Image 1 (cartoon, rainbow, N blue to C red):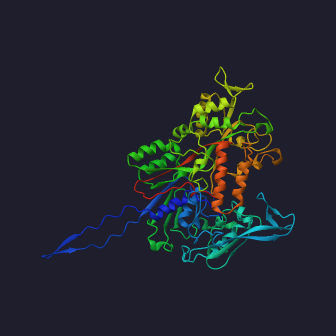
Image 2: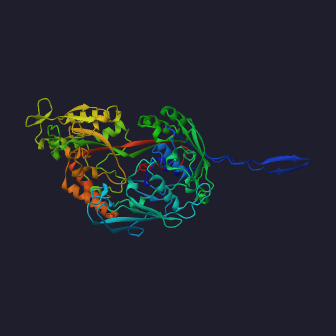
Image 3: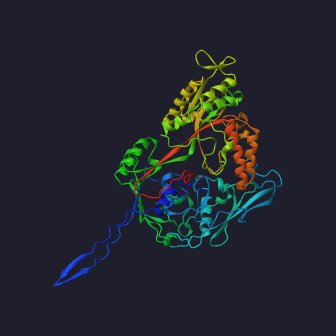
Length: 595
C-alpha cells in the first residue's frame, strides 16, 4: 500500500552505514619458559557487538504494518523490512522493487475500456460510483518486479504472491486497515510469476503516482491461517517477519524493543548492516531523553520526543561537543488565509482583502524572517508559494515565483494606492470603513500565538489594526453554515498544510470554495476563484508525464505567489539529535509521510 515513511527510513539508513568505535587491538604478551624466552600470541578477543540505541517518546501499539499508523511503530518497522520504494525529497525511489514502473518503459499502461451502465467507476471529480450510461474510460495497468534473491528473515524467499496475500488480507472488511482509498480503486491485483505482480485500477482512476500503487508484502507462509481481524492480536504483531537488516529479538513492554542482525538480509554480502544490534528505548519525558543523549546513553533522539524548545540548549551542547542536533525543515508548513470574498459567506462581513494590492501589502509588511528567528531560532525555511523549494514541482528557475521580502515602504505604498488612508489614530480607512481585522488561530499553540503577536505589531506599523482571536481547534475547523470560520466568517486565519508528493494545488480550485450547496465542505477557505489557476491545475491533473506536470505546476505556483489568496509563512522544524560519534545520519523531510 502507498506509504509515507516517517523519519523511520532515516534510522534504517543510519543502521546500515554507521560504525561504532572499534575495539582496541589485542596486545602481544611475552612468557618465560625455563631458560627460553618466547613470544606467545593470545587468542583473539571476541568482537564487542556494535549496538545503536535509539530513544523515542512513545512505545508502539503494534508492529503489524497494516494495524498501526503511529510514527514510532513505523520507525521500528523500517529496520525490520526494507520498503518497496522510499519517499525522499517529496518523490519516490525504488528499493526492493527493481524499478519504478513507467508509461515510457511499457510496464505501466493506460488502456481504453468500455464500461456499461451500472459498472463501478471513478467519476471525473474522483468519487467512486456506478456508471450512469455506457461509456469508454481510461484504465491503468501497472506491472511491478521485486529484486530477485530476497528472503524473509526466516530464510523463506520473498515472492510476488506475498504482496497479493497482503492485498487479500487488508481488503477483508474486518481487517481494520486505516485507509481503503487504494483498495476501493483496485479491480485486480495478481502475481504473474515469483517476482512479478500486476495492479489494475478501476476505470476512470488515472493516478499520477501509479508507480507506487502496490501493497507491502506480508509473509503468507506465516499468516495464511490467521484471520485478518486477528493479526493485530497475534504474536506476529509484536515480532513481525521482515526482509530488512534486523529482526525483533525482544520487546519489554514499557521499556524497550531489541533488534538483532538479520542473517538472511539480502545486502549482507555488502557488509550491511554495520551494527549488530538496535535498541529502541521508550523515554516519554523530553528532559529525560535530552539528559540521556547528553550522558551518551542514547545514540539517537527521535523527533517525537524533541521539540523546538530545546534548540538553544542543543546549540550550546553542540558547541561543547556533547551532541549533534539536526533541524529539518519539515513537510508541514504554516500559512495565513485571507478572506478574499466575504460577501458570499453566510454572515457577510467587511471586504478588506478582495484587492490583490492589499494582500501584497500585508505580505510585504509581515516580517516572516523575524517569525523564523524568534520562534524557530532561524532554523526553518520561509515559503514563497504552496510548495517547498525542495519539492520536485517547485520550478528550477523560480523567477516566476513572486517573493515578498519585509518592506514597510512597499506595503504602505500599495495600501495608499488601494485607497486605504491613515487616520489621526494611525489606522487606515476607506469609504468610512476602518481597517480593523481579526486574526484567528488555534488556542494553546504557543508558536502560532507568537506569530499572531508579531503579525499584530507588523500590521500596526503600516496602519492596520489587528485583534487576536484564539478559538479551540474544533471551533476553528468546524464545518457548516453556522460555523464562524470555515464557512467564510473570518478576516484572516492561520493554520498548517502538509506538503506531500503532490504539490498543494487542488484545495485552491474554484469548486473547492465552501458554499451552502456543498454543505461548506470545500477546503478553499480564502474563497478565492481564479480561472487561470484552475486551468493550470487541470493541465497538471490531465497528464501523467512528469515534465508536463512540472510545467503546469510551475504555472499554478506562480499564480498563487502573485495573487496571494494565502500568505505562506514557514516550514515547521523536526528536531532530532545524535551522539557525536554517530556518522552519516541524514534526516529527510518526507521519509515520513503516508499517502
